[in-house]
Image (cartoon, rainbow, N blue to C red; front, side, top):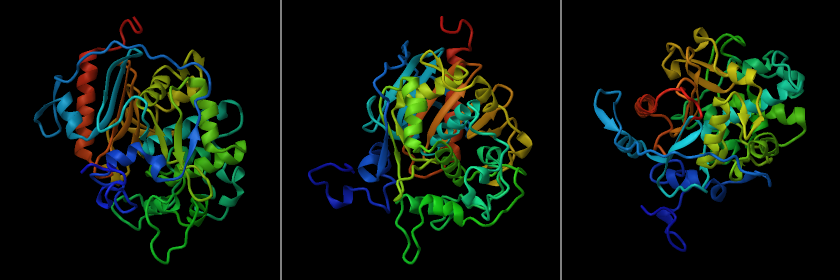
Length: 400
């Protein structure tokens, strides 16, 4: 189907609330969020762009074994997993940059939960300035959370998704708590008879705990919305402005970005960011380079190191396969390998920023998967990245 082609497009070619995040609409929708929903701009400002040098290679024919034991190559895997944009940075240089499905170097793509790692990064910046103590209760910063399931939780609990708050993240359940976030932001139609809640009202409605605070990791998107509330209240500044002032401008991002809003104008901290492929790459490169970007220390190196370390014993979410060897979750980052510090910002429908210190490599993949989660596609994506990393080599003669 030629989605949104024609003047006007025929009704069957127009994304709607019922189908904008489903095939065949996902690719167009994820590239055009500001045409579908309210957003706030994230300005890059007037400063110089952080230049990414290029030494491009053709990786298309590189082969590897997939999760089911078959052989594939990079070009085939990118096509098979509905890739809209793919970027590989090695030793600080672009070695591969591909665009599909109408995306180009100037276009923005929805990041989904990759957004969480950007929001977590703001806490690293402001903690170093003394604005936050991660072990203080969240109620110190947002007193309205007293009497909710968040009472007694610390900022550290929420950053590591260990609050204990009962929250159903099931994307296949149209009435789950995760679906209620979509209702708040107008991403799904509010069911008849259901009262509208802004995202802050949704947070305050959570009254039950399933675990003690700090007991174990459970993936809850509402944690990042809570972080968004905390940082906006503490700074007196809208999240979009904070992202612009603290990241986009000092990092020398190439393009403006945007972030989705609810009816109260609150930014969607857990998954509403849209940005360009290269700017996602710059963010990953900053984390690879110990928080340095565009010649400046943007994020404290100690924060970056903490995002690569975590507690494997607490990484035991049944929805993500239970405990996985060498893996953890820390400060809004997924850690794939605690020994090497390889970490990821991940989002549903195939969004990924992958930071691999031993290989001096950053990989960005923005996608339009027809379903929110696909463990087989994710495993094959990791196999492809491992093959690319092995072919490119490690960090010897870095920046040569």
